[in-house]
Image 1 (cartoon, rainbow, N blue to C red):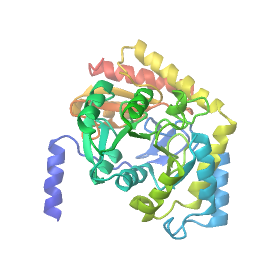
Image 2: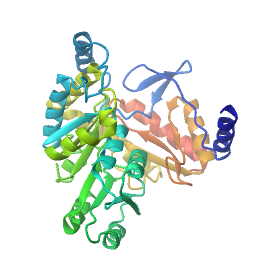
Image 3: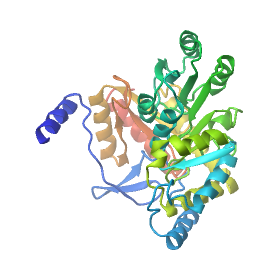
Image 4: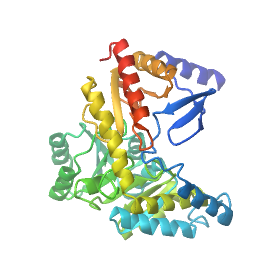
Length: 390
């Protein structure tokens, strides 16, 4: 096995896509310790900077004392703690859906949905830039896969017209905010196509939850179509600062997932402290919607400054900011330069993104001070300028 692994790793290195694990220690909402040096963390998805909030940490500690360290069972056995019932009820109401089912993480939630609900007669229409979890879920499903060009509604409708015949049923699958590009899917228009052709919609709102909409419930609220998807997936591990994910839908669909979603049935349930942290984060957000406005003040400030300095931010909106470089080597070079200046950032390369679109993807979070935001922008500008990227 060693020789086989060595050969495969050599191929990965030649492609310029070799990855290593970087072990870090969090110091605060925005700072980490890496290799003995303090960095500003530009890679966190804790958009609202709640993962260090004392109220949320306190709730997690209380659950730890009352419930112990782990759930020690799948949810189908004895792992469905009463804390999960509270979280599912409150999150369903927050999101505008009738029922909610908590999974261990977003990847597992997406992997559980499509194989559980599709048949060989079905067709899945998937955006070409959908997350890896959706791509692999489609591969595991029994349905035919049809890829449509990114956010291209005309192409999507052409695909629907060509594929939907007889008893076939179609599913349109899309992220709400695309995790690597930061742009928003045309959900309202997709909803119209769903109604026109009698399809189902599955929306992954992992990066929209806690960020978009007046209450922070996500992109559907932002677009005025809250609770409109047939199946909606959201996570607790990003803006809410905890861990885990939820699938939202009507009661019969949730019951079907309980009975057929293997990533739900055969996975140990979340630890009680994590569930309690999600409940606390959700309740905190409901009482303090101002944190969303504080996040967006930082987002708007950074975006306006970067645009004025000549950065092309494409169609991205919100906290995810892609700096498209192109070549893998140049992306890594810019990453190393920024790391040397105390900015912890990651170069994103294929297969995570399409070939020749390697980039630095950084996230703006609520916890940054204005001085930190200025340093980030100025360092990005001087480094990109030096390398001829802008």
